[in-house]
Image 1 (cartoon, one colour):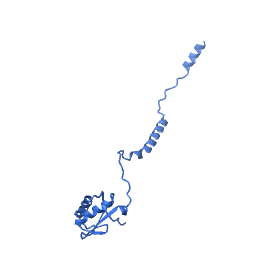
Image 2 (cartoon, one colour):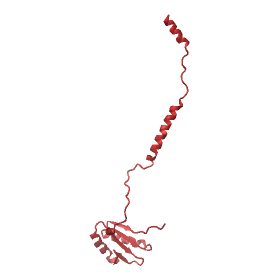
Image 3 (spheres, rainbow, N blue to C red):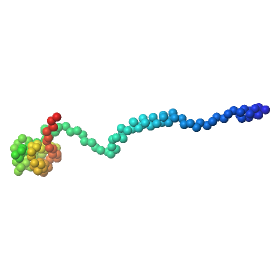
Image 4 (tube, rainbow, N blue to C red):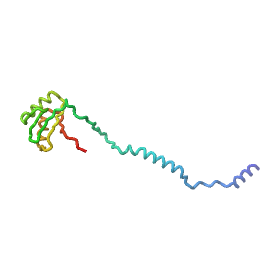
Length: 142
């Protein structure tokens, strides 16, 4: 008889209906987590992924390592404040670069000097054995 009563109770109790609604709280939680991940990783994506060796900042050249070659408007030349000429320029520079192997030849030319003359000065410095040639500029006024 107990079996019959148990079966009858089961038949009379209503069965639970399946949940057909979407629970929105977990969806909001997941979307907020994804949004936080996006905000954290976005700055990392703005940098290029190619391996690049960036140049370091250079301090002003040391006077001891600099060989100054000056060219005035009229074409007169000087090497380290000593007068020179186009004929002696290469030999003067060769003598100076022999003293200091890693010296930088600093070309100080008037802004009205034609670029052809600057090219000749660069070629003379390279012929004399200069490892580096730099052009002197004046800082812009603000």
